[in-house]
Image (cartoon, rainbow, N blue to C red):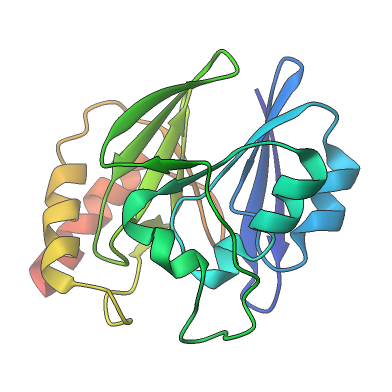
Length: 197
């Protein structure tokens, strides 16, 4: 597996290209992601969203149409793809697959697991592929996603952190912003956030 990363837009939102053998999966194509993605893929098979906030989904539809590949979005956040309270100019996008809750999918022969962790937003998820997880805005290096936004929920975040604490297999985490970390490291940090919540 090869992972390419490029921070996109004003919020430096990480867009990822995951290359497994001769296939590529695009994760969270944010603002201005299209040109970079197009220059770095040869056989893309899907676009995945960790959640629906505008800075993670801005280039969804443009890439979906240019590459003629399906878009997978957590069901709880589909409504966010058509409008944004922060960015009224968000280009709307329309998922081909609405991923509900925790789900294991086979995409082009690649096993992809969505782990649902609401709190930052209703559909917020981590996406597991092989030995790595793309944590979106749920977990960051030494931090967690904000839970004071529209459609955020502090109690849901607490439940999600408690659920995350039960995961027993360490994985490298690639977050929606900033540098990579590991699941076990962020489980230790989550003890602080659970006390705060």
